[in-house]
Length: 193
Image (tube, rainbow, N blue to C red; front, side, top):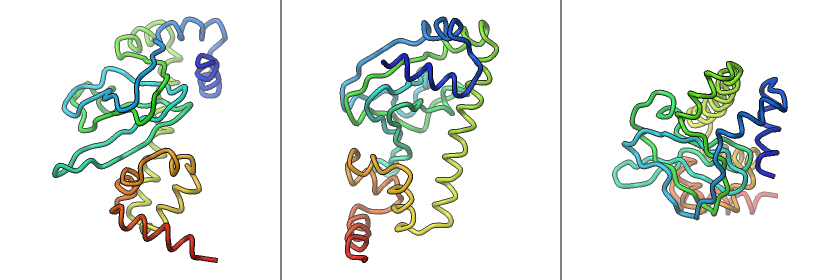
């Protein structure tokens, strides 16, 4: 089942044939990872990206001893600290699983080998990164233009599944607010007609 998900993702983004995809998939390793597993510690170079078959993965950084959630990855998404993975520089982020996960893992070395075999892999990675860039740009712009309630409403509209899957204090940090502020926003919205 997991291989079907990634095959469909590849087909949507690039023109890989079924035969090419069979070869590409040999470079991915299927793993089951327990909840609360740290996949990357800040300060280390990211050597893997993860295609999520099921589960949820959190990207976060630590400032003044407080964890700040910067993104949540769920099913049919590639998860990872892309900046570190591509630049080969230490990541400022950490990555952990928030749920038991089943993933397909692609290492940096495997990706390099795929580039040599299939030039189309460059297109796939470029398009994946462009998609991620647009999402992150929208998030960044939202922090500048929107207030906390608007950011919450956007999250509720764009990714409603997260609201029941992610601990509220992590949702709050993702929105750039305190858990108390998040609680007030939710209460206010419930009372609105």
